[in-house]
Length: 462
Image 1 (cartoon, rainbow, N blue to C red):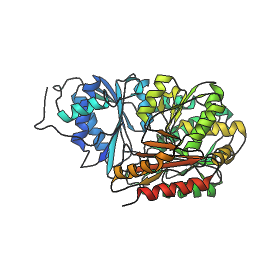
Image 2 (image 1 turned 120 degrees about the vertical axis):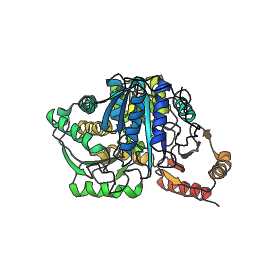
Image 3 (image 1 turned 120 degrees about the horizontal axis):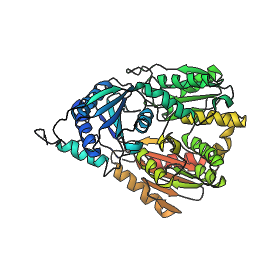
Image 4 (image 1 turned 30 degrees about the vertical axis):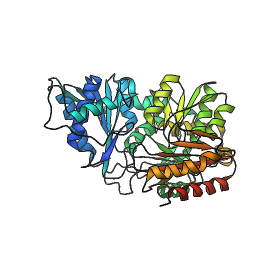
């Protein structure tokens, strides 16, 4: 084995992927060490790599590729691509694993890596990702091997598009007008490939494109449509275009966000409930996995449709694992991650908007009407991000205040307390130094607002 002069503690490893500040938590040398650790942890011989559009992603991807080649690995390079294209290629090309260099929606001075093993399965936090971290930190690697090389597999996109379109029948889709906002991230070229194939298969959809070209300078800000301050751009564009709905993606487009025909943003949990109902109509009795942050609307929909609601910790690795263990047909997070049994149990930001268009076509109703009852019956606060000076003390104040009053406590992820007509979840982010609060209720938005303000004031006490 070879070993550098000193071992190195790596702070970029998070609960289920790698994320960190450039020059502080992550650089090209660290990326190469992680790639070497990945090869040895998985005994990999063929690895797919892809990258998002960030300025730093090409150099980091080159460092990963070089380390893989030095390890004797056949590197299958997708080039600029979404994380879900890497997931697909790993299974489609029978690779040992895959790495996408991306920081998704994080600030400009961040980057990261999302990794999977054979079959597009997530790396377990202990046996998989933990082992990669252990090896990368120790720097104890096998001697370089001969035979490594890089192969361009960007033409794999055509097969990926075919898989995505297998979820709908393009010729049956109504002639809808859709506003799409790629946020200058990686989504644009992939979307265009999907749109072209939709047209070739008879779809009569019309698209208005916004911020469509990938641009590493992100002239319109980092693409994170979950932030309220980023939503008016898409909302206004939907209204100006007279579109039937709007769709916006984050930087690596593994999340997609929806706006109805009025330009109103639709909170992610309502899309989860909507898609859960649609899948159960075709798969009676199937399992639906959801995260613990906002749950009542989804649980109600699943119960009425005769399915099984299964709760998971927040995060793609946890949800994918539970879906694989239970065979669940669909999983969704209120943060706009959507997972599909028939897409390697992985998340996709392209499949959900196609399924929503399919629903609109089948029901002949506007999107606002499809979610009207969910919005009315299960109002929610939206995710509230806070940065208390002492996170642990803030959480303890909340627990000591509400636990004596609650009907139930759930510690699946962070802490959740349920009451007769409202509940909340409070958790620390797995990827950012932030405390996240979600409050939901039953038919009483005023109560939800009041309780959100009440808890936020408690957290922000000095």
